[in-house]
Image (cartoon, rainbow, N blue to C red; front, side):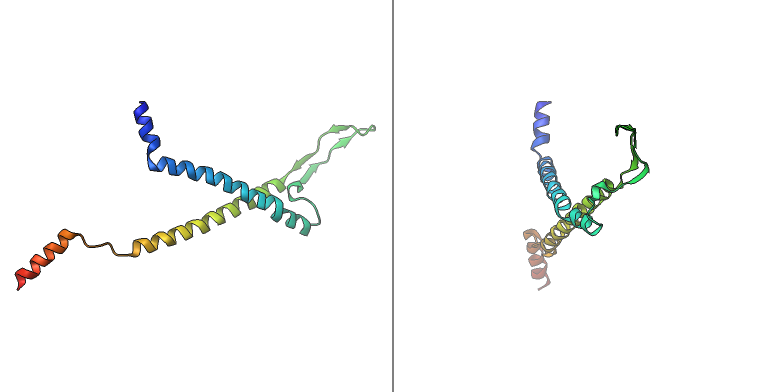
Length: 133
């Protein structure tokens, strides 16, 4: 069982997948930082200075007693965080699309080059041509 596990782990696909997951996680952090640090503040600024993650629709406001203590909590639909996560996802998906497009373009060029004719086929062609003479 241990030897089978070693064989499984040492396969190229598993190692490639592990590297892809690690790089993908790091890339996700980069895009999240971009969205949180640049995109969302710009959207918040354009919407009047309110942070996008604070956007919400209040169904029932919080109720306070005479002393200012909260008696009933606010009931709100917090759609701002969802909006921010959607933008995060769209940016990550777009950048991955661009990387895959470039990757496929590189591999398509490599595949377009015609493969070299095997030696046995060349030899058979020579024999055929010499028999025709």
